[in-house]
Image 1 (cartoon, rainbow, N blue to C red):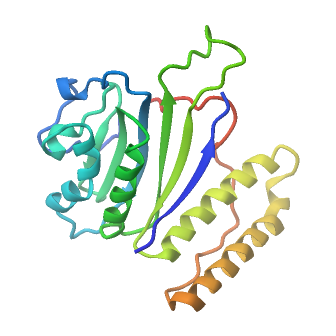
Image 2: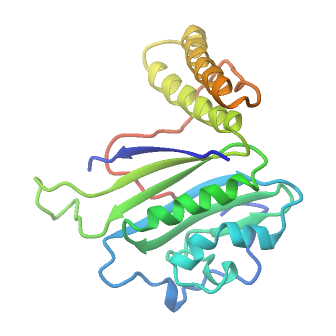
Length: 241
């Protein structure tokens, strides 16, 4: 299976969902930030899972996360270090894994992310994007040295049952970003040609992949549209709920 990652440097509750069994929103001792941890790491995204996926499979796929947090099980590690964040939840009705979870850690957390993505590929029903933000715990934007730069970092991880599903999510996010940017200067109805060119780029990339791997069908195109998503500018704010 395939998963893809985009890395970008930074410059400066869900209705109808349920917690993973056995969890609540009381911060436990192992959820407290590690001593001298250089980062607070926030993982955020929704992953549609197949209807036949069991809790045991979800727990095993997410083991790199909860084990990194020092927990003994998913139920033990599903809570975020911040009580206002939902943590790791599974919406049974829609078979949706929802993650809004923060852990204190270091660069070695990237290996846990790699392992999680590979495992979730096996369970995913559709493509999905997961945002990961590393917040520099030593950086003080208001009182620190104005010449000092934070070590904040941002990753966009793409998960899916096959490369076509992953490329579909990449294509949709790119169209959203481009349309949002260009609608400052053009009417949305004028941007059909821009979206068509994006679709052509992804189609060509997928055709090259098919020729090398002999796989599935092209990602679907579309007309794009306005949205509120943004992937750049300033120090990345935390997700609010």
